[in-house]
Structures are given as C-alpha cells and as structure tokens.
Amino acid sequence: MNANIASAPISWGVIEVPGWGLQLDRERVLSEMVSLGITATEFGPEGFLPDAPAERARVLAEAGLSAVGGFFPIVLHDADQDPIPAIERELEAYVAAGAGTLVLSAVTGAEGYDAAPELSEHEWQTLLANLDRAQHAAAAVGVVATLHPHLGTVIEAPDAVARVLAGSTIGLCLDTGHYTLAGGDPVALVRDHSDRIVHAHLKDVSLAVAEQVRAGELDYRAGVRAGMYQALGQGDARIDVIVAALAEAGYDGWYVLEQDTVVESEADAARALEQARLSVNFIRAAVA
Image 1: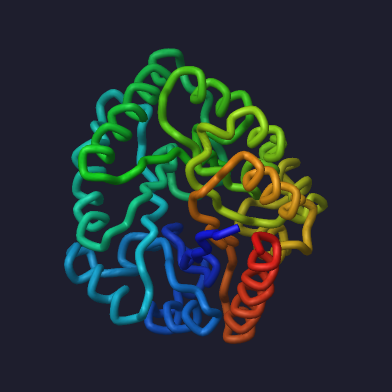
Image 2 (image 1 turned 60 degrees about the horizontal axis):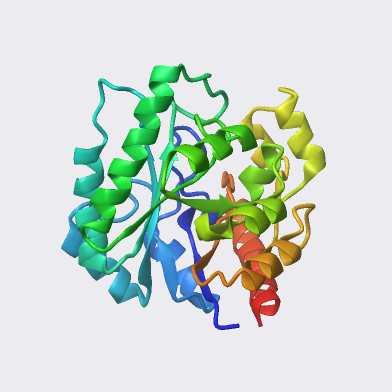
C-alpha cells in the first residue's frame, strides 16, 4: 500500500493548552521529525510556525517538510460567534503552503480538555450549520475540512459523532485514541462510515489509565503524563486492525502520528523522540 505518513508537533509536547509543559522550539521539533524519515507534518498550534502564510510555507520548505494541514480548535456551537472569518484567515496559510486538510476541533470555549457541556438543540443546529459552512469555505480554496471528535470538546462520544454524521456532510478525522477513550469502536466506525473518514490521527491507548481519566481520578493532562498514550502497537487501541480496516475500505488519506505528550525535562524530550521513532517504525510496517 502506498501510504501517506506524517507527524504532528503534539508528539513533541507542542500544544495550544496553557501550562501544559515545556514547548520545544520548532527548529528542534522539525529537525527531529526529519531525522525519523518523516517528510510531512501538520502545522501545530498557533505560534509554533509563523502566522504569515508565505513565511509559514518557507519555514517548512527549509526544514525539508511538506504541509499536511493542521488541528484548528474553534467554537462552532455559539450563534453569537461566527467562526468562518477565522477559518478563512487560517486557510490562507494552507493555500500558501500547499496543505490540503483542515482538522476542526469543536472546542467549548474554555481552556483545556477536561469537561464538555451538553449542547442545547439550538446549539446543535448552529454547530451542524457551521460545520457545513466551514466545509464549503475550505473547498472553495481546494482544502478538505474535517471534524476531529476529541475528548473535552462538544463532539467526543459516539452518539455525538453519529449526530454529526446524520446532520452534516463534513468528513471525519478518525483519532484512534480519542474515539477509543470516548467509548467508541474505531474499527466499527471505519466499517460503517468509511466514506466519511478523510483523515486519520494515530494514537495508541492504555485503557487502564484511560479508565482513571474517564472516572475523574486523573485530569486529561495527568492521564497523558501517566502514560495514557503509548507508542503505536504497544497499547490497547488495536492500531494494526484499524489500519487494516482503513486499507480495506480504500482509505487514501494521511496517517498522522499524533500522540499527545507532556515534556517537562530533557529526559521527557528524549522519551518523546523515542516514542515517535517506535511509532514511525510500527506504522511503516503496518502499511507495507
């Protein structure tokens, strides 16, 4: 199988959440990606790469990386906040860098990923309409918009994902870790809705730690710190089965190695690089 394999800065602990941990500089992160034989990356959070579209494209090209697109957290359920202007500004960088995939995360508007509210019917209708509007705005400039079901956002659990599939035409970013943690079965999602999966974030999961997070014994960051995410093939998420199911369904999008990591020391940074190395080797073997 001719697979598209990429990485994301979060695998090096680079994230939009304040107080998460050390934020490694982009030169180090990009060079370590390249050292693993990775040739493409998602953009990472605001501030990791330059805001100016042409400058962002230049930095990636000089590092020897092509642009996949990126994770873009935005409020989509609030009728008093129009998300389209911010999305259109972000898309300028996608066009400049030749990136093809916008990964939307329907965040709550609060910092972090520890709690998600129940939406009212009005908020649901606003969300679904904005997803279709975002999809059309992206398509107008040649970019595919996707929705990323994510813990601690307004779309995390399988029933919420099902409502999006029924009420919107947007495609999904299958995050194997988040969907598993929310109680979903990624293999069943691929089997039943392969036509709607247009992007994949690969995470492996320790279900033992995940249960502590779901029970409220650990917050999300503490769960990550405790090893909730494992190198691909070393956890309980059945990554090999998921990848095989995607291949059987004819999936031809990106496989993005995207493992949330907390870096607080040089030892953590070295561990993150080794986890990324193990994951790259696993996915290359899985898609061979």
